[in-house]
Image (cartoon, rainbow, N blue to C red):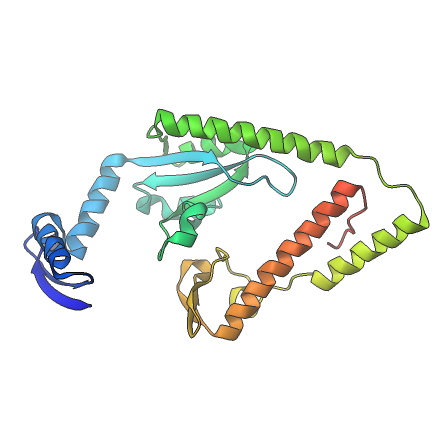
Length: 262
Ligand SMILES: [Zn+2]
């Protein structure tokens, strides 16, 4: 890796670090000088773009059903959000990665104001967003709309399966089933996940970035370095919690009683 001093297209100077073959580097330098902007000018341009875009609210179908089996909508604000920051927070939105499905592939996720709500609450939530001045985003292409409709249909059928499973009859009151009920409860007790200190009380996107010796996480969206032991504990916490949820779901599906404390 090497550092180069360059003059961006805005006329300001800066340093870039480049990798790769020398012709590749030269191509990049040329690109920066012709089209690139320095950090300050880039920020300004973004702000102007956002101001032009206006203050928008949009939504798409979330990838998963809620714990109650509801279809969920992932709402997010876009554009000129800065002047509305406090109002957005008050509506319960969180500053987090906009598209969770992409996070594993990205070094730093694309951040935005996000809230996941059951589909039934969509209109109500949109009204709240309109009340603080947001307009409905009309930037979704036909293709995206078709994808969303498809996704919605998939979720509907998943929801039907979920509800059918819930309706299943309770298991007969036999000693075998009573034992099974007890076994499930013990399993839940042993798995009962306790949040590790580094994330307790904070919002965490459930991702650990980096590798051994230099792990980091983003509690409340701020970078925080953690030890290898803490990284291991976080991963165990996630897998225990997944197993815990799976066990609860299985109990429900088989008609066993999930204890009130779980
Ligand atoms: Zn500049």
